[in-house]
Amino acid sequence: MENNKFSELKNGVQEIIDFIANKNAKEANNKLVEVSEELDELLDFAEEDEDLIEISKYQVLLNQLHQKIIALDGQVTGTL
Image (cartoon, rainbow, N blue to C red; front, side):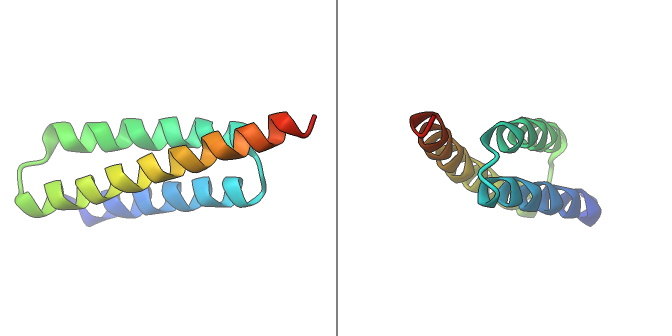
């Protein structure tokens, strides 16, 4: 699998983290959906064990970021 596909995922994850840091839950969630779709596509075509391991790491990370977004969204909603 192309290494630059994982670079694109890494950049997408960094954008999500930046949105969370800026307390922008909506944009973070939108980017999370986009990156998740890219990850699903990579998973559909992955053949090497190394690729599957890398994909699983990103799945765990995206799940953790999703929990952060949910918590952030609750904080933002609670302060209004």
